[in-house]
Image (cartoon, rainbow, N blue to C red; front, side, top):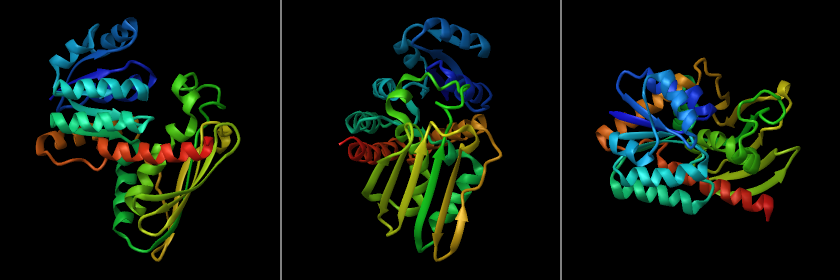
Length: 293
C-alpha cells in the first residue's frame, strides 16, 4: 500500500514518519505540511518526496496518515476519502460532532477503511488487557486518571500547540481514557457530572450501558511528579489495573498501520474506526457542554 503523511509537527516526527518509514508492508511515498520548509526537512530525513500540493499527494497514494490539529484533520480526511484514500487518523477525530460526522460519511460513501490512532489500543500489553476485561462480566465501577504535565513540565514539544491550549485535557487525553473504558464498560448512556479542577484539569462521572459507572480525572497541567495514566476496574471478578506498556509510540503506530492494512484488505471495520472516533467526540461534546454551560 502506498501511503502519504499529512502533517510535519512533533507528533508526525516522533511517531508517524519513523513508523511508516520502517514498515515493511507500506511504501512511504511522501509528506505534505502547512509549512513547506518543514515538509522538505522531514522528507529529507526519510528519503521521501515533499509535496507542495496536497491533492497531488492524494493522487499518488492509496492511504494517508494524518498528524494535524483536529479541525484541519477533518477537512483533509474528507478530501482524502473522496480521493479514494484509506484513512489513518489521529485522536480526537474531531472537536465538533458535525465535523466528525462529515469524516464518517465521506469514508462510508467512498468505501475506504479508517483507523483512529488511540495509542493505548495499539500497545500489545494494554490491548490484551482491554480484550480480557471486555470479556469479563459484572463490572461495578472504574476510575481512570490521565494526567499529563504538558503545560507544567516546561519541556514538552506539545506545550505550544494552539488547539491543546484552547481545548485542554478534555479533548487531548480524554479520548485515551474513553478508548479504554468504552470497550470494557459499554457505551456512555449518561454524562452524570463534569467539574473543573486546577488549570485545565477536568473531572467526569459517566454512566455506562453495562450498568457500571466511571470517574475520570484528566489534565495537562499536573505536576511532573504526579503525571501518568492509570485505570482501575472493580467488579465481581475483583480489582484489576491497566498494565504499563513496554513499547513506545513508534511500534504502536506500526500496529495501527497493520490494522488499517487489514481493514482495507478484508473490508471489516476496525474497532477504532472513524465511527468509534465520532462516538468519542459525541461524549466529549456532551461533557464540554456541562463544563461550559
